[in-house]
Image (cartoon, rainbow over all chains, first blue to last red; front, side):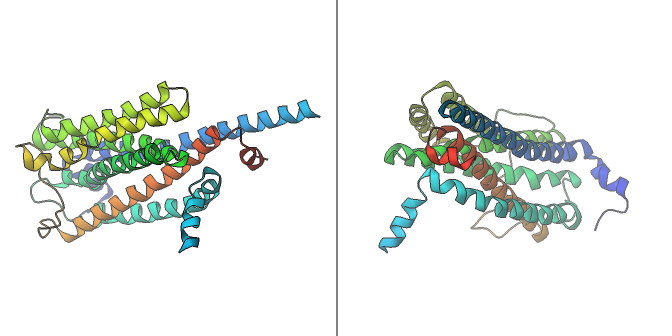
Length: 60
Length: 246
């Protein structure tokens, strides 16, 4: 391993802005996409449940 | 043989694919995490410092994976869109719509990390050269596909219009891929070649391949997640969906 300290690792040999800017934004995108999908799924299920209970009230 | 054919058609319906996709989803998420952890470990702690680019080259581990996926996902999207157009199968078109946003994000990551790599190595965030411009066009094709589908209210008509755009845009993918050999560009040549022996350290190569596998598994997982939501949204009036949310 080429790193002698945590500080050296985060400094990335002077390329910290570029390396962490790349990995950071990529990680952010890969976390946000599934969260947005989960929200879209919950919204879809909620509206389906609302329709269902409205149907049941009407028929009952 | 006869049974096999019936089996395949069975999973061609949204109703039977919905639970199947749900069962496959955790496997692909797990694989993405495993490949990603291994790839990051190799990329940051095992792969040596580059002789020319120092530590800055480590951007390669996300840049190449995202760039490959952005092109590959476009082909996958166009395949499903074309199949939906030719056979008039709902699920194929839903798959195309499910792939598109993930593909667009991959193209965005490719351009973003490329800019952050270009600045320290070339001295500029952006140049209008063949590789960079054709990748930007790829992002616009994804966004165009999404915008076109969003603009048409009737889903089946949106599928057809999107499919035509997706199929016409396929011509851009080989242009991106071969741009570095067809034109004189600032961008370096292919990182991995099937015909030449690898010029980079073996640990770098493995780190890159593992990250590519991670992005691949991630993309499959996101596509499965999204196609399940699309099925719920589009099949909302069918009896099985009403029972599924009980």
